[in-house]
Image (cartoon, rainbow, N blue to C red; front, side, top):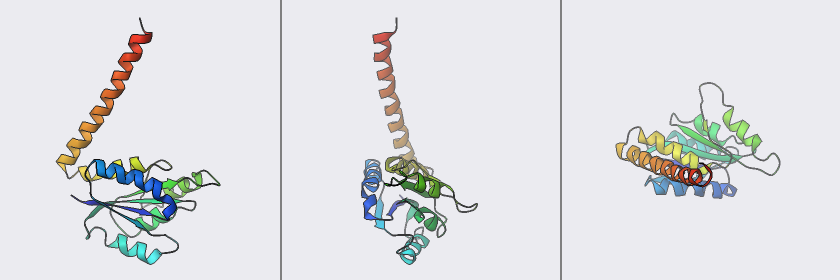
Amino acid sequence: MKKVAIIMGSDSDMPIAEKAVNTLKEYGVPFEVHIYSAHRTPKEAAEFTSKAKENGFGAIIAIAGMAAHLAGAIAANTLLPVIGIPAKSKNLDGMDALLSTVMMPSGIPVATVAIDGGANAALLAIEILATADDELYALLKEKREAAAKVVLEKDKAVCEKFND
């Protein structure tokens, strides 16, 4: 199975990364976590991402706030799918990071999830890997069906309580 890289721009992004890590662990997907800054360690970020495919990665998750250039810098150095997670900040509540992450130039795509959306970023990476892994696809399907069952059970309880 391919690995997923989780790259944070700063250790302040750790709580978001942990959500992604926990989701990847839940599905048995191997991963690595790193801190590389688009601005402070651009050479290291470029070196890691330019060699990611040959090092067994299938997708990269990038977490950054404020200017949030990390996902774009990573995407410029790899053809692997890059999933950007805009991080919430004090000043603009993460809207700055969201817009920076989502507004990539044509030819350098970055899939973008919600502000602080670590779990969904991991799920998107898992879905990408599952296109070539039938066991992983089956596990995704099983968990999605279980989640639907929970909602339908709650609907049944509500209907019994309020509907004639």
